[in-house]
Length: 65
Image (tube, rainbow, N blue to C red; front, side, top):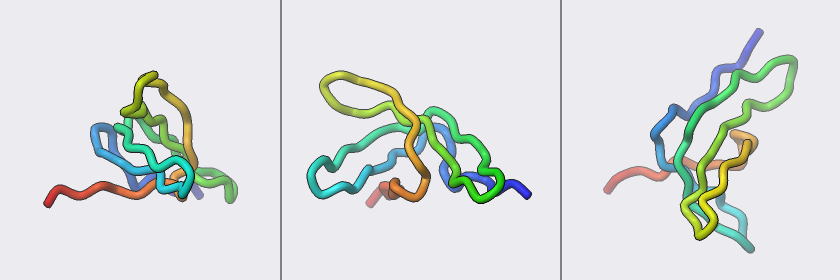
């Protein structure tokens, strides 16, 4: 049974780590299988504009006010 990711491409997310809070855009998301958490490909909004896969549980959705 696959767990569907809660983020969709184009959404703004925040990696909320005390030493490195960073914003990024979701590029894609992969389903989770066999108790492995879902992963999300994020393009970071920082100086280097890097992309990396991050566990879904480490991200929070940034909502418009």
